[in-house]
Image (cartoon, rainbow, N blue to C red; front, side, top):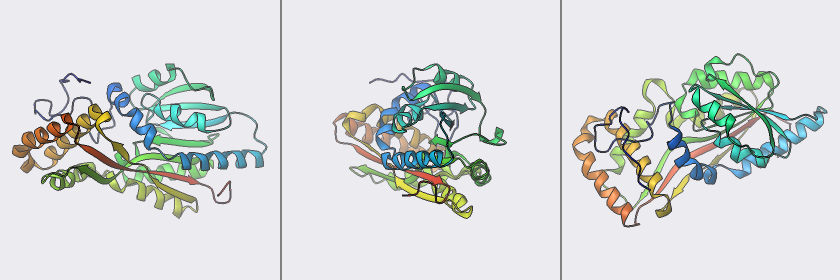
Length: 296
C-alpha cells in the first residue's frame, strides 16, 4: 500500500514526517483511522467486552430495563468502536457519537451499522462539553485517554459515577513498545516520544493508571487488560505510518534526534521492505463499573 505524502501537517517538510496522523493530537484523518482499524479490532479486550455485557444484562434485569442500551462513544472518529463492540453486547443499542471534529461523528453516523445498533446520533463536542450523562448506560472511548489531562479524567469519572454508567476505555498507550529486530536508537526515540505524549500536562502513557485510580477512589470495580497491537509484515502500511508519526513526535520533543532521524527511518523501512520488522505497541483497556452490579 502506497500512501501519498500529505502537505499542511506540522513537520511535513521533514523526510520522516507523519503523513496521515499527528501523534498527541485529537484531530485524526479518516484515512489514518481506517488504516489502524483492523489492528484496533484485533487488540481490544474481548474479555472486558464480555464482562461489560454481563454487567449490563444483570443491571438492566435488576432495574426492569427493557429498552435499548444508551451508549456514548467519546472521540468516536469514524465509528470503529461501535463496529467492534455492538455485536458483543446482547441487547439492542442506541449510540451517541461524540467528536470535536464535526465531520467525523456525521461520517460515523452515516456509516452502515451492526444490526445491534438501532439508531445513531452525531454530537459535535468533546468531554469538556458534557455536563451530565443522565440516561446513559455505558460510556466508551478508544485511543482517547492518553490525550487527556488529569482534571479531564476526574471529570469523566464524576460523570459516569453520577449517571451510574459503566465505562469501557480502550487502547490507551502504555509506553511499552518492542521492535524486532532492535535498533540502537530505539530507546532514545521511545523516551522522546513518551515525553511528547506527556507534554502540557497530558497523561500519555500514565492515562490508564490515572483513570483506574479515579474510578477506584469513587468505589467502583476496575478491571484492566493489556491490548497491544501485534504487527508484522502484513501490517506494513500501518507500521510505516506509525513509525513516521512516532519519529516525527520524538524529533519535535528532542531536536538532538533530528540529524539521526533520516538514517534511522531508512534502516527501519529497509527491514520492513524485507519482511523482517515486527512491532508490538502497548495499549491498555479499562472497564469501570459500580460495585456489585454484574461483577465477575
